[in-house]
Image (cartoon, rainbow, N blue to C red):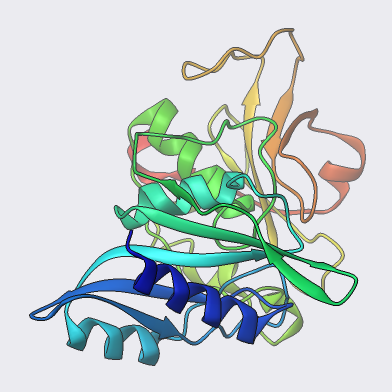
Length: 253
């Protein structure tokens, strides 16, 4: 990474501080160039890339790396960074920077590359759209059942903005509503929301093939609630009370 690219990323990170900056390093005829991307996120610790700015970046050349800053955040890549790096299939470049008494200081640049990393099903951090309740369902079905589920674009807190994504999309994702409950069924819940907005997977008394659970927990469900670690819980009580649908994938009928 040459000084010109590092300085361009630093300038962008400083300009966006305390929000995260993001951009692509693209390969042009003249060489590598840093292209800024617009961050649409309303949160300072999150990047939601503007599709229009992403399309404009692609016009300049082939994207060879993705950059984002870590303003007042831990220097090391987050779990969401590692998962997104795998999904994008590009190296990720991170510049940590902090405000020390009004003076912004940069820590050394960090680069991670796709290496096959997978977030654990149990104990993963929450990051909407990357590591949330639906991605946990997707990852469970992929790792445990070799069933690949469709992904759906979703804004953070879509259920507060008139959305009803689970009920509108479960059929196109390959599920049907059932009345009984079996291992691998998806449990749809209404979790502090006007509509169904949360999903878990009932695993019953089963172990996971893809990772050890450590101890038995009969009649259990795995799920990932907002701003909590994903977990395995007994399916009953509160979780059963807020359940609105039980879904079964068509390949399991």
